[in-house]
Length: 229
Image (cartoon, rainbow, N blue to C red):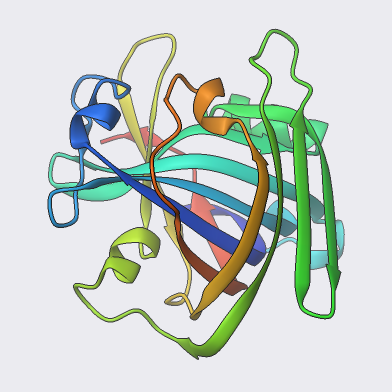
């Protein structure tokens, strides 16, 4: 049952393809790497969370904050989903609530988000006690015509995910949460990524090559609390 409503705005999907083994050694037991044409993917996704609130509560009580995450794509018992290595956000209540209620690896960060003439300027600097430093700075925008990803395409693989998995630190068990939203309306993206230490902060070497870039103006989203599968 979905218990949280929100709006995700101005998303950059920046993805690097890597060897599946690179991702697999960072995943808990029972969580398998999901691949496309034999390659695993690491995604850096900056965006704005808006009107985050309990479902059916009025939008005016919702929280707005910028978020940045490092994620990959997995299967658990055959179910496709997202696995988050880290999520950085500029909201103490949001970070605390997500850590306690959703068991997600959220970290407090100082962020900047500016949008002018279609360009989004996003920055994030982690300020969480005891956590590794993680900094990110980029300017990005969408280009070309809007489209919905085709079934079986790489774009669908990287964006159309309606489950996420987390591991309980106390028991080591894998929990599954669900999200709901309309199919993403995407555009190709142009991005200048000036700083990005998310990979190093999460124990990865920086992937080779340029990222595959997509942009979305956003979507309304609802989410459930993670539970045992």
